[in-house]
Image (tube, rainbow, N blue to C red):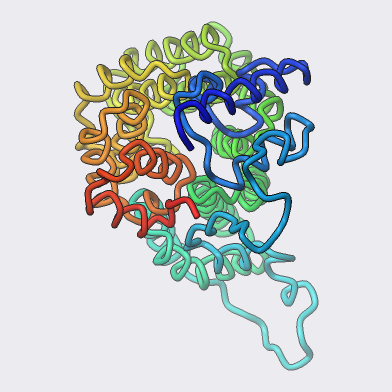
Length: 415
């Protein structure tokens, strides 16, 4: 696509968007893109060559694909869809398909009564599962959960009293780990199911704050589904209910972690919707909560604290197209005390910011460093793959071998 063709394509997108009565932020949100990306497309600064993205654009604009991009064939075998990313959680999807322990409700005639599994052993395994989730080691996480989830689901059905309550708390934590991981793999429907199960188990265990943590996971699933209204509703209702419950009392550190995390997911919702002022206000509100806490914590495996707020500030600025501010915040940040996933997420978003600035060397360095920390996440994350693809397009014939190899590992080359 030549520069003239890019500009002509951008003008067509702008005309069709206006005819459809959509604003740039609205269309961008529907496509899972930032308002900045949409603006650059319409100005002819970014070529759109991926067939799936073109189809999505045509669908949202309500026009035929060949009207949006006349150079494309109207049909035929030449059209090659974007390769699907490797999904390391396919086995985990099967775990949440159907009833988790139906044979406990309808036991076979030959089965003898089961003895509950040691809660202490289950707790150690749940800690292991979360450690794998924090490292974005999804293949190993799936392997661990293949037996852990059934064991927990059976334990809460054959135990009673304190052991059942403890098992329900562990089950809630496990499903939260699953939901968080599904979100990172862009498996939003599975993340929704896992979050809902986490919320149910937390409520049954008598842990309202764990319920709120589940609502945080649920809001992220809705964002991935591009249902920003549902994401905002889930986060805001949990946040307001918790604040009403506190009244004039100062929150505990655990309550502060929940409040700040919910504020951060609202920042994500608002940045995806292009609501700049609201997103910035959400970040500032979370920043105040974190400053009052004074240190990074990991209550409910949320990793909330001053450092994580700034990591989210980087992501928010990238979504809003404020690449310079994202880089200023991110480059001054030391996230070495947080999990590999959080460190990799910061580097990934810095890479995205440098792509927006067309600083290809810095972008590639950040993405490669992110891959070293969390290879499974980087190679399968939708935003990371999009950034790698854009970097390949920007670099053109001068793309270095390291970038092309990264693109191959992430299946992030255009067909």
